[in-house]
Image 1 (cartoon, rainbow, N blue to C red):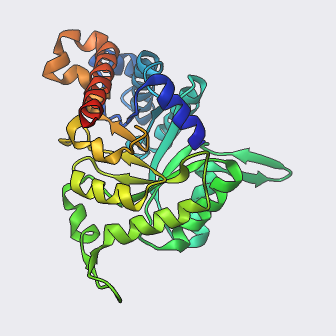
Image 2: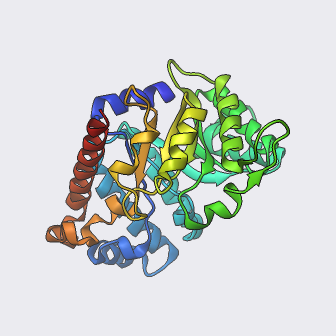
Length: 314
């Protein structure tokens, strides 16, 4: 799957993943009213509004980008109906030729991680039949329970030729409370925990190589460019998923060190900056009726911002 992701990045010229992280305040009123008229102001009505919103945005941007990243919590808040919309969104995006990164941030004891991995990436046996659950192409994984929580995901990825993005240095402001803690070394100076996790990701990835990059990647926030520079060297063959662009403060100039000299090695996520573009001053002229066109314009501008930053790097 990492080879397919890279091919799509090359073809589109856009190392961009659109985060499909809907909340109802992002959904234009006319979309909500259409859904509520059919299903009422219920969980099913909310889930239908999200589905209509997602579908319109995907239809507007699928030819510009290689991948999408639906965040499962934004669907779980609407209960079972929300999870149905999550699955419909995954299936629809794959039909449109997009790589789907399930942002699930799972990580637990071995047997539980195995169930998560099977449910999101693999197959479960039901009688004599092998069935697929959500069937994303990649998922995000929290490694802080140790290798017990990660190895079941790696096993399923090897079987299914799919991939992982493992949390290393996240974009949120409080990430440093734990991830930046210095760990005492035996033969060297104390080092931040995120560096040690990055080394482990590189080690896991060495046994899971595609043609040029591993299908075991890392999550490193755009809001921490200096750490990104360090981690790029620690994990030269890991693809880095970079959240934090746009609404969280990251910009193209912050991203250059996440990429390798070949211009590859990173894919940048924008969620609100794309899906809620119509609510931003820059794109307000599109209006609520043309919210999906505003999302398309935001993708074009993001692609240009990243391209200019990489060109300036030389």
